[in-house]
Length: 369
Image (tube, rainbow, N blue to C red; front, top):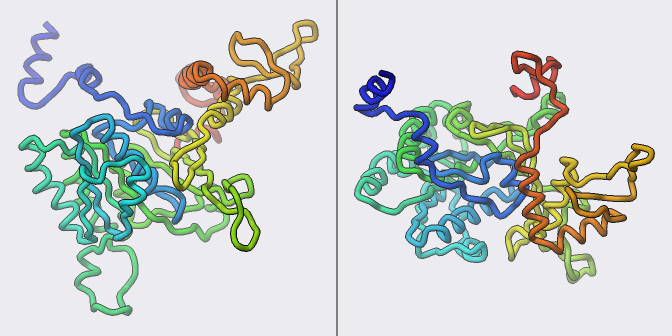
């Protein structure tokens, strides 16, 4: 009897929930093992919207370059569309990241009608005709010149900010159905302001401009920052002044919102300016160490941890952290097993009550934020 009613209820435009999972495309793994883990979905998913935000020069656009390049590699017919509202797209960097510039359309415009209306109008018609468009990037939302700004006096006397908050809700409503129906990988890049309230900055140091619409539309919010520390700089050789030459930096990504899995995970990887994401073997080790998957084994006689020894799974213990790191880095099979263990990791420190709620009220606030 239930099947009869289910069939009748999906006869127009409904779909049984179990069919959604069957029809879903496989995730696109990122080049960073810890970022792939942090998404809790095996990477980026088609038909979802990702907001990449953070301060300048952190690596937001570069991450989008790599994603578009990987989409092109997976699908030899895939076309990407890059809305360059900042007028800063670099074909040289895109090629360095492995992208095919012959299959990427760059639309240099900060006119919202040529971005949002184009997606909901002309691009939608192209998709309906079978165009193999697989990904879109808007770089950046903050650089778009909204109607209120256009209609103001054309001088430096123009009022600053605020106009996107009124425009974006309706604009994104045009984009979201197209992205979902045609399984488009979508990356919205956003610049941020610095939080001046010191107490608030301890929790969230960055403020996203243009209201809440971007947060509501995004399936995942990724806060991308550059590590401005001694250990966060990748150096090689020397400059004319004799100091070391910077050839890369470390990037930290915090998952601030995630409709597709667990939020609040953190990834960290090394970005090389010529080679993209590098040193992934050490990244795997550091992730496993942070989760306790690579651990100090206990002494069977005393029951105490032997802090000089390190172990993973059923492999023999190894003395010294550097030796353990070298062991992981030298064996891809071990790295694969570690990442499988990371995917299966569950935080046992978070205790739930019988109703599935966090026992500590403060933890509940943190998890819901």
